[in-house]
Length: 85
Image (cartoon, rainbow, N blue to C red; front, side, top):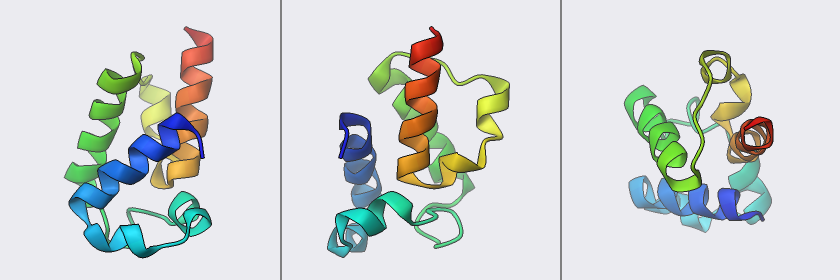
């Protein structure tokens, strides 16, 4: 698990402690939005806090990326955006 993914897992566990009981692979692949773990406001806060934590900015296009619904996808998008910076 990458630093970004570990950070995001801890973030979600802070909102929904039952998330900690999942296996690592399930944490990375679960759709956080449709599972009900995060509502739209919590997902937006996660994204904004990720910007502050990892020193990058989401592009308007990145906010539409469905990969942001999973921790693995979030990690991919952040790595891509940081690489483009």
